[in-house]
Length: 130
Image (tube, rainbow, N blue to C red; front, side):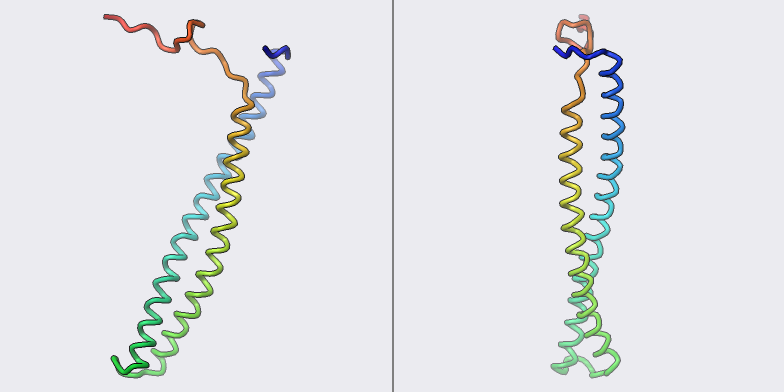
């Protein structure tokens, strides 16, 4: 059993709980950032597909050639590719940070001294009547 002073143990647990709360806020922020990246990756893939389809349709004569539309299609492909690359790398970085924060949180949670709940007979709920 732990021989530390109970007040010191409570203080350590309080610090651990504060750190866990900070990590949980960080985890939420990272999850929100990852969700934004996921949406931007999807939008960039759509832009690439639409821009590519428009460019190919004009190149093969399926639709009337318009220089402005051709430039817009090529811009959508290039811009979508840049956006895809940028957000994919950001997504990877934030996912790694999220895993690290979750691992650190789990480690801190394991360091908290467990407290006995109930009357010591191994039960935390009162016995069922009837």
